[in-house]
Image (cartoon, rainbow, N blue to C red; front, side):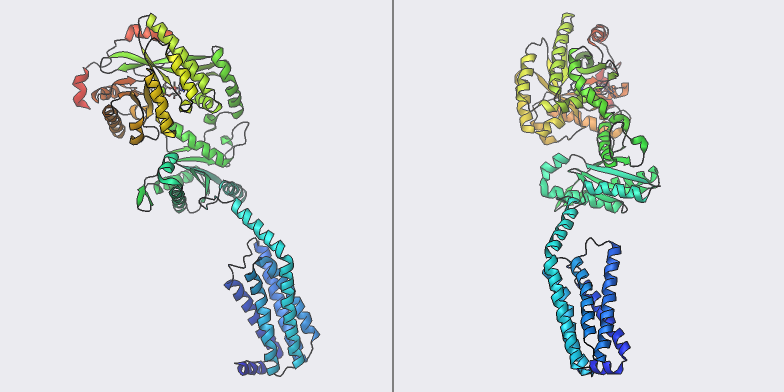
Length: 608
Ligand code: C2E
Ligand code: MG
Ligand code: MG
């Protein structure tokens, strides 16, 4: 081998040799860099720095090789040493960007040792002087020492730089799923806004429905796998999107679209991608999502008095979609309200209970069997002196957040008991239902106060609790509800079907009544799916021994169908809208025995 190389050396001119050798050496450097690319991770190299780095290696290697070889042939020695030192400059650069590990050191030291160790031999073989060969050897050694010194000296620096790089990387990752996190997603929004000022940057929040329920059922490990799969499907459905995990249950997607129509197409694709069940091991899990959408650049989405960023808006839109019971919603600032005014509203609330701004309206409940109004639901109303009527969907959730819900509920209950007595004095004995927030269900002290208060009632009282509240902590809920029933209060499961209904939970809830959510009832006469769902809810309620109430009855055909399904009670605008107690007295005087259905109920039974 050696004689062959020596022969080649002899055939070539000095310059040819210099070029061939340096080219070979540079190739080796790059091959080495490629082979060890996992160890030599110039992670934070911007492309310009990477170019400078490569150019330094190239220039210093070529100059060393050319200069060194010519010198070697001419019998010079100092030139070789100088060239060797020049090359150390390139190694300094390479050590700094290579990283701190010992492998990085080895890959930096090996080439000089290898080449400087063998080259003198070839040079002497080819007729060069021994001095020149020794000089090259010395140059190689010097190089090795220099690299080691650089590595040892800068090691601490390199380690901390590597740590910094790593923590910067981790700060943008979600620890559970390894997906980019919310901060990373925020950055992507800002970057896209900078890069594409003329296009729309769309932020979408894809929330997994029934997350807590699923999490409880399948455990943390599988939930993480499920989230990863959801993120994967989003990325596959819309490859141009940046996907991240925004909160425990929300996957975010950020992309750039020409117009909202295009954005909507992408959303529909994402929604479609969730249709197939997700396989977790041997099990298939059906996952549905609710999507909130926001257009980063749209000023009309801006909320007065608050800096709500695009991803926040998308997440708020998820809540808005839930409230409107639709699968996809775009952020609506009018529903979000003005945060500053919300704040003042919260501070007004407690006072409002005492100063006559709050009142209770009653909505009659119509018994389909007897054709009489047998009960009424108490619904709170707030007539604000400056803002006018504020709907309960706006302030009840706020009261739940501030804790004022306890005072509010107690106030409504006390008012309902007074009104029930006033009604009885006018000859109308009526059961009254009062809404009982899920937030209060774990409060034992409050439960005692409710029971004490209810002891003073002259008629039947019913507490309406939503199933979502019960699922939060079914054991505590069951205990509280049982205590209420023992005290003579009846319990209604409100908004049945709207939340996380589960047959298993339903069985454990001590209740007397099942109230089917109006979302299914209102259109049941025209929507066969709704009709089927209502029918199965009625049957389910009856088989659990519960009285079944349908809320949101707006039309005669719906009422007729309910009667035919043997639903027990109907509540809705068709019967009457909620009204103050004085009006209710008049109403009962006129309509108590109103026969809403002209054909007898029995005759309708076959029609359903
Ligand atoms: P909810 O308990 O499900 O009350 C029924 C809601 O449906 C009432 O809205 C009622 O006005 C409305 N409604 C009745 N019939 C129809 C109909 O035929 N069609 C339609 N589209 N809607 C109908 P409201 O009074 O705005 O109350 C909304 C929610 O606010 C209530 O839902 C309840 O969750 C809550 N809420 C109201 N008053 C109180 C209260 O005193 N305490 C608590 N904790 N929550 C309350
Ligand atoms: Mg209710
Ligand atoms: Mg309801």
